[in-house]
Amino acid sequence: MLDYTEKKKTKKILYSKPMLLVLFIMFVLLTKSFWALAKKYDDATKKTDEVRTELSHAQDRRAELEKRVDFLKTDRGRESEIRDKFMVGKEGEGVILIVDPRNSSATIPELSTPKKSYWSGFFDFFR
Figure (tube, rainbow, N blue to C red):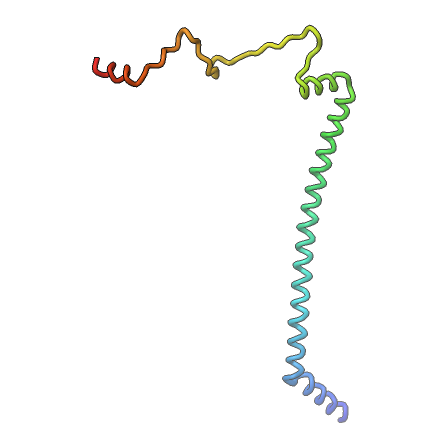
């Protein structure tokens, strides 16, 4: 019989309003902590993806630079780089300039018409 009364007291204490309030507050705090932890996990996952992408780009850039360095180690590569940077050539070499006639804004002086003054244009109107 004592066992039954102890159970009844325990139930009464556990199901009392103050105890339910304490349990509810604990539940809210745990939920808030879980939510913060889930957000941190999501942020960490995004950051990891960004870092992996940056690493991939850095590795690609490194491969390009290594190719460039290997090219510059050769005589042809050095000569090409010097020609591009300093616009120089070997002795006896010349420069050929090719102009596209469609894009040329230069006019031939003999074919261009002389510029008329304002007054001569005014008088040409009445002719």
